[in-house]
Image (cartoon, rainbow, N blue to C red; front, side, top):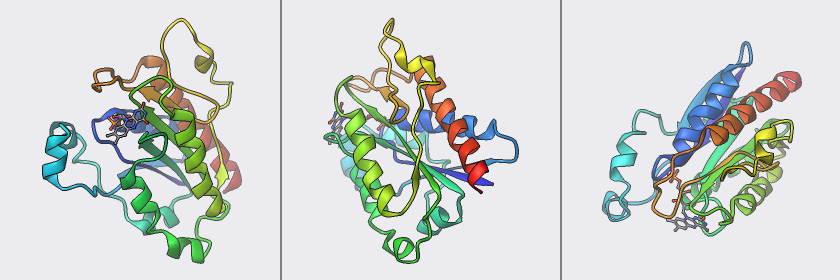
Length: 202
Ligand SMILES: Cc1cc2nc3c(=O)[nH]c(=O)nc-3n(C[C@H](O)[C@H](O)[C@H](O)COP(=O)(O)O)c2cc1C
């Protein structure tokens, strides 16, 4: 079984979460995790102005996803930074190229799941994941989130991402925060949870 972890990350937070999701996937026997990035849509000049070039170098080893790789996966776990409470444009553009998959029902019945990152605590993590789900439902995917059996999402003794909709991290206004242990544990849990359910379906 092969589970695709497809993400876009500008400054590395979603990338780090994606690595943790993949670790969780691999905890399930016989399941392979494939890490892929959504294609960039911004010119290098703009990325430079946004201060993203260094972080981009750190992710360059992760191959860019093709649309057909979605079809060949047994499940797909999507990661995106929040952009005004929605998925980022890079992911949107990639998904908007999946009309052919939709036409042949290539993703119908496959598990789909979403994780995210935002600068601020209440900056739209839940709306990003829930609005992402709409696209997955149009593709006929079976939605999986982050159940409360991951109890780390109930913590109030420290700032943390994570909701029943999916794992998340809070990056800080300048991207100065890195995913906490609790947030990475949520990502691993989600990866393992998706792999466990997908294995039952497949
Ligand atoms: C155009 C734009 C819109 C953004 N919108 C939001 C937002 O609505 N709420 C928020 O908390 N952060 C917002 N952010 C911050 C990003 O979510 C943050 O940089 C990202 O989560 C970091 O993840 P990454 O390192 O994987 O790129 C925005 C950033 C950009 C560039």
